[in-house]
Image 1 (cartoon, rainbow, N blue to C red):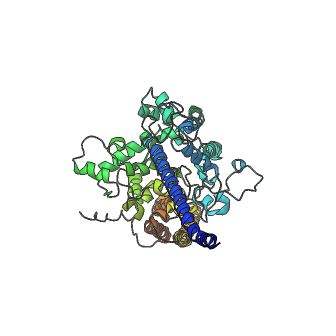
Image 2: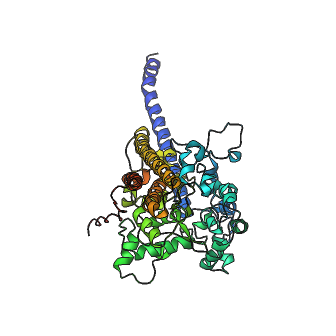
Image 3: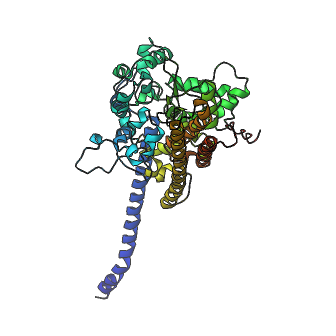
Length: 498
């Protein structure tokens, strides 16, 4: 009996030891399984990074259809397809249309008219096709459709050169030029838009920015290559474009070529700059030309237009030879703090994202305000609310100043119309018309630029201030005030470190 009691009394003391041993063994097993799973996951991610895509189809230098590229790059293609999204920021953004009911296909909705939002634009562009039709910008998915069906096609004969910024034209250039994109570029420039449009079926496509063999970024637009050559040969300091400064410092041998000389980071802006630029159609051939011979600033571009006596149309109300600015995002970005800090277009509009073990650029090109976490907070350690408020403060101030400049221009145009109706001669109106030309172009340079001043806020404010000043000087000249002359471009600030 005593022995049995002792045994029964000893049992409880042994049970915890067995339980502890079993627990340790279980924990060791789970830890081993976790480590094995982690190692397998790391190996899988490393394998994904080593093989960034599966070659499902062969891509050639003639593969235009992005859907075919999408078989090898499904994640990038998925983002590309999302450029049909219709999301509006406070001041538009890259996809700006009215709110679309959930039961309506957004692709069937026409972007709202900016002319109806601000009728002063009709006065500014009186006699020009933009006074007939000018709508909110939409995503890349619509760039070809919106250009094809705009009423501007009926208001004026549009040249084939328009396709440079609205269609996938790389292979069309090759076909028209017998393999030479520069020759094909010359051929397309001279074609009527309707005829040139038959050469392409897609908006901007993968092949317009990527080499199909290496996937490296590349420039496929001759106009941009020619424009950069002219810029490189100018004396305008461009410290934000280090490859151009390097080419200059090495003696300007041959022509500057972005495809062989630009840095990989610069290419993340250059591929966008192929289209998001100021331009004009030169001569009877309608050669698409980027006016960078003097530099990228609005003053230098204005002086160049004066030198070549360029005018886009004669203003219907005043008789002034006027100019229409065209989406100069590349020029304005070059004047801003982001460019000087090495931040390129793709860093904000196509920020890097993680997909498994892959780091890819988000091909859903859109306003950074719709993707603040990845587009802004990589560099700026502030809340999304704070960053959005900062951007909208800049844009609100810019928009307010834009409205002052617009009212000033309207007042000058009204005074010019009155003076013309009163019988003043062309000689008596010449100075005021010249001031209108400059006031209008400076205002339009900011109006047509799609960041509402954000890409270079201080430069945008300066340009609008100059526009206001030109309008007021035009009014003074009509009233017989002392001649003040047209100011020349401001002296270029010295390059830091030089």
